[in-house]
Amino acid sequence: MELSAPEFLPDPSLSAAEMEAMQRDIAETAVFDDDHGLDPSALALADSINAADDAQATLDGDGPVVVGVDQAFREDDAVSAAVAIRDGAVVERAYGAADLEIPYIPGLLAFREGSAIVDALQSLAVDPDLLVLDGSGRIHYREAGLATHVGVLFDAPAVGVAKNLLCGTPVEDVEDRHLAAGERVAIEADDEVETCANGTTIGHYYQSKQYDTPERRHVNPLVVSPGHRVGAETTVEFVAATCAGYKLPEPTRHADALVGERARGER
DNA sequence: GCGACAG
DNA sequence: ATCTTGTCGC
Image (tube, rainbow, N blue to C red; front, side, top):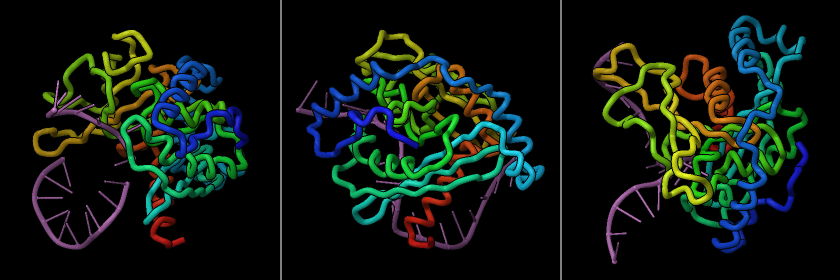
């Protein structure tokens, strides 16, 4: 992939104030509406074809390309893996790495892990139809979380998938009740989100998987939000279409597994 | 001042 | 995120 907005490269040496200022610019550049020419059902189709036979799908290769990205950490550097999936089959893998120069700071995650991700994506040959990042996108203090930052850097459709809520208020308390598979609860901007009006839908809780009997065993919902060029509702559709019976989207699971072995020196 | 805070 | 095995339940 080729950088589209190099001026937004996540330079870890910037001051916190400069990082925040950049995020405000990124949020203004970001598009939180559908601009991708991607049909959620095309992704669902790709997944169902999946188990059937990857080999054939790989040969055909005309479905949308979804790229999952994930990071892992070592002593003092971050490694990133990008896995491209088309018609349910892995068609390419790319790795990246970058020294860890700053600690984890809520709201500034992209400046800690971003360089490794950029490194990986720049070496990716295929042109993704959708990027799936592990973290928030629009659900962010300045509407410029990791998924939005990366999406804007490459001007590619992107969504963020997180396991925990960074900020914002769900329209319904999710702590009290376990959601059923497929359920979604909107997350609205509140005072913590400085760049848009309170009440704006900035993402959703999405229950990608749930056990039949929530009594003893339950699964926590995902927190999904638009990264770039995808609306909040479609973000849920995309994530739903890429989850194949597991809590996390398939592209993310692949990236997870690969980056794990890479970080442990297994590859 | 205190709490909250993706990975 | 990471340090880490088995174990309980679906």
